[in-house]
Image (cartoon, rainbow, N blue to C red):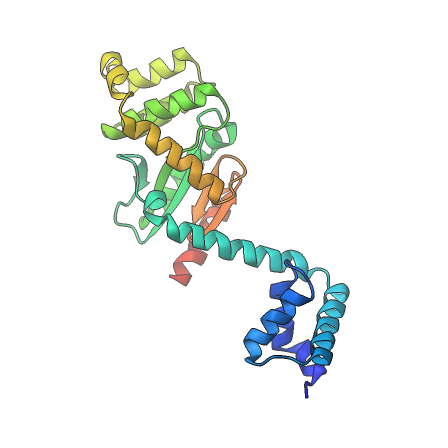
Length: 252
C-alpha cells in the first residue's frame, strides 16, 4: 500500500519535478515505477498521477525549474561529448594561464558590439585570476564580413598573433575592408601570406565545427560562454563571470 502523503512530500515529488517538462501521466508513472522497482497496480498508478498532477497545479513554479535542470543536464552531455573541440584553443586564440585550473570559453563575432565591450571585461578577469585560461572561439553569425574576419583571425592564431589581430580589429570599429587590413598590419601579417593561408581547409573546418557545436549547445547569440557544464548566451559583467568561475572552481 502506498502512503500518498509521504509520496507527495518525498521522493515522489522529485519524480514529479523531473517529469513535468515531459507528459504528466504515463511518463511520470514510468519514472516512479523505475525508481520504486515495482509495477504499480492500475489504482495505484491513477493515484500517483493525481498526486503529481495536483502538486504541479499547486506549485507551477517548479515547471521552469525542472525544465532548466533537464536543459542543463542535456547541455552538460553535449559539452562532454565535444569537450576537446570546445576547450582546446585554435593556435594562440587564448588568454591567461595555459596551465590554469579553470578554462572558460567565449564564442564571439567580430561584428558583435557586446563582444567588443566584453574585451575589457575579459582583460580584467584574466588579470584578477592567475589560474584562469580563456579560450576564444569564432562564431561568425551576424554578417558575411563576420565570416571573413573570423577566417583572418584564425590565420593570425595559426601564427601566434591572435591577440594582436583580435584587439586591433575590435579597436577599428565596425568591420570593413579598411579595418581588417589595419588589423592585419597591427598583427604583422603580410597580405600575400594571408591570401595564401586563408585557403587552408583547417580554417573553414574550424568555423563549421564551432557553428555546429553552438547549435548543439543551444547558443542564442554572441557572446556565448561555456563555463563548466553550463552555457550562457549574454554579455556578462565581471562580477558575474567571477561568481560563475568561483562556483565551478568549488565544484571541481
